[in-house]
Length: 427
Image (cartoon, rainbow, N blue to C red; front, side, top):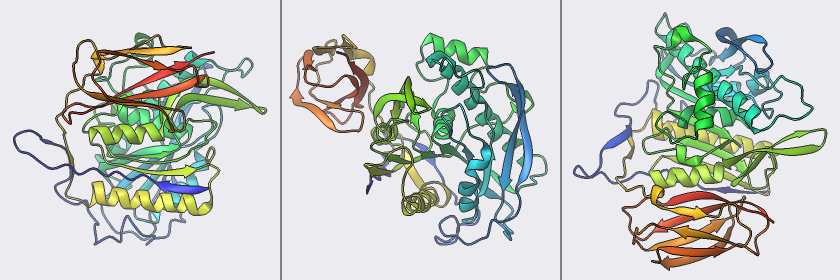
């Protein structure tokens, strides 16, 4: 498999008249030592983990569960405050447990991070018939609630004796596969986003955006300073916005479970895969981060499936992620500024969607020159029409295979954010 690095750590020029810093670090985190700590393996991490309860809740099948986390520390480390990486396990939201990310936790702990493997609630109702998209929405919202409760617990502990010697200002979150989906939504999905009513209803039913897995820690923040994304996805990459936390991603272009681009995520059992919900994977997340000025590091594995990468690829990603957070968050000086650009997505309408012959794009009199591009679910360009000024234009889709695609509209003016929309082709 060919590994391609798409690294776009954007450092925009500061204009005191037109921009203002929104994600900055004026003073280095404790332990910055000219690129050794948080970059190289300088500790052992062989001691048993500390097992801590961070919450309690009820599964979709009505079972009460205690939510636990395993905390790994760098052996022999004398620093009084260390950054934290919180990781969630994979398993399509129907299996897995926190022990499966122990190896990742110990690897990052060797670089000087405190690392945490967390529980979250998974689907525990009967699997025949397989859960549908609304079932999985309930599970994902609950899992995000659990992740946020874990982050709040760490800040609560730091404020009450700090037994694990963490720095509450530097907590990174993420995970593997389904766990990465949890981390990405915990980081970028909030009350400022435009959400369908059925999603808002589910969030409210589970205690709101912070959830109800631990009410005792609600006074503490669940904000994150960065995301570790092992082949995860967002339901809508536009939820990632200006000033959000940096993200580091690893994804294979041929992922059959969690889409690399825009497609349906699948639940697979007994050799059969069932599409559950439309998602936007690491390729789109990296693209969106570029558009809004969020630092992003992306390793794309050409031909790679769902996590079936070589040990060397995993090592490359781990080391690059640690270096990325070292440079961008922990030991840097200024990572990005708010790029003041106009968001015109509300004016752009695509219809019919889904479509079988053509999709029409209406700009409602915006009167700005633009380029149209359509990408398939592995990020390949399948249609392009540059230099347009029409208020309405048609995109032929007769020759495209049925499936999900991403429409990208880039404007000639640098003052306007690109517009991205999911489009579906049916036969």
